[in-house]
Length: 114
Length: 115
Image (tube, rainbow over all chains, first blue to last red; front, side, top):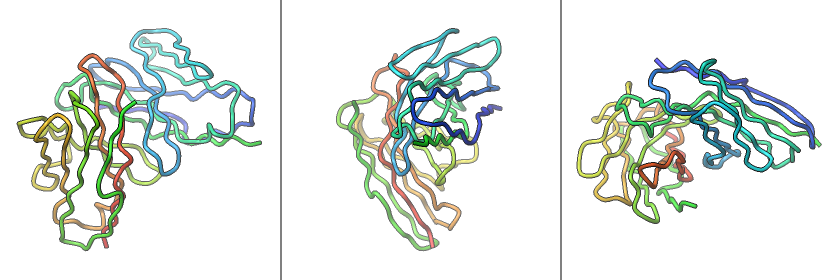
């Protein structure tokens, strides 16, 4: 079966850098995604890594190591508005074998303090 | 960005009844999915809604309990049948616009409470 592990909570101060790790065990791995979800809101897409290495999008970066079944989301210059839940998700084909199905991790609640 | 609407946004239902949730997308999409999320928890895929054919259900979810329709490329419904308090959750519609896209968009969700 599939499983993803990420820390349940992370706390940091404004302006700091925080890294949220994600390890996974899955078959048919296609890529690792990250989603942000504010309280009461819908998940929104942040990044996607299909190949090893670092992808940078503004203050957010995401890293993948396929050989280690590991990835992380790096948030720089933290702002109060970054307080949210962050989910890693693997595209692993699911029950139907579709490369577009996502299996989500349990989520990391990030709290940014002033 | 995607415009996805869901109706109703929330509902309180009695045990044993059924509720149908609608998902409308602003343009044609290749794939539509239904997820369930307990408050503060992760998202669990219920099924993939297939246009013109039966939905593909994940392990632990069955058609009799969660019938799904997708009559066209912009609309889908999920019915939660014979509800029990354990069905209380947030139900989210999600779409992928293009075949080669890895980005999924999520609707605002339907918060269901079963008493």
